[in-house]
Length: 256
Image 1 (cartoon, helix red, strand yellow):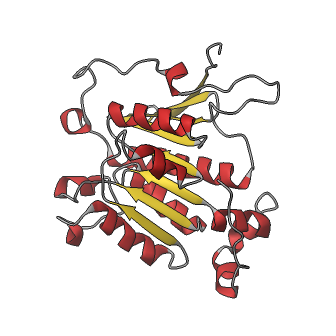
Image 2 (cartoon, rainbow, N blue to C red):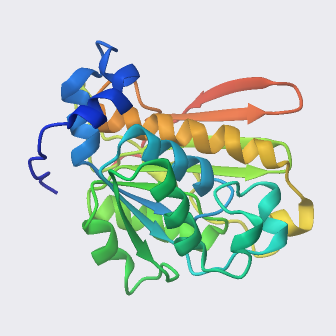
């Protein structure tokens, strides 16, 4: 979608984002791109918490949050955007309150719903870029397929117990050599059979792991919006928390 021009950064914004602006790779122009950006985050849970916090702090102008759940006590071990007083409150509202405290200059749009085939297309088309912080395979595949159809970059991550993975998807684009860039189904052609992969509630998860992976997702968003660095397109980043080891696997698009 075409970004609208944003007003100049105010004196307070210049001070708030001074550590960005002094970076030659970002500067004032890059900060304006962040201010103009519209980013949709699916899930205000373990991954969504650090993603939303760091995108708000970075000055993403409009952040959309999709989640149909409410805050529970067992969430608070990892979903640090919520607090004890928020138990029972809708996650989108709890998250929006936190983001307003972090940065009052941004706009937060809440969508208290579950993403499905009926609403995904219109919702995703209203944003420039999407972040997947969901916790189930049905949503991941729906999100990946819809983002590909709507030509929206997708930053997707997954976590389990002590391990995490992360990649960036732009299957509607081509690389510098003219080759099609890979999509989610090039990496994971089909979802696993139901019940094969245990949920976090069943298998457990270290809270800090979601912080690591969600923060990496936020960094990929900042790179995509500002046009700096090399996003994780065609590369799957793997993190093993127990051995403190990162590995990267390259993958390609199937012929099409």
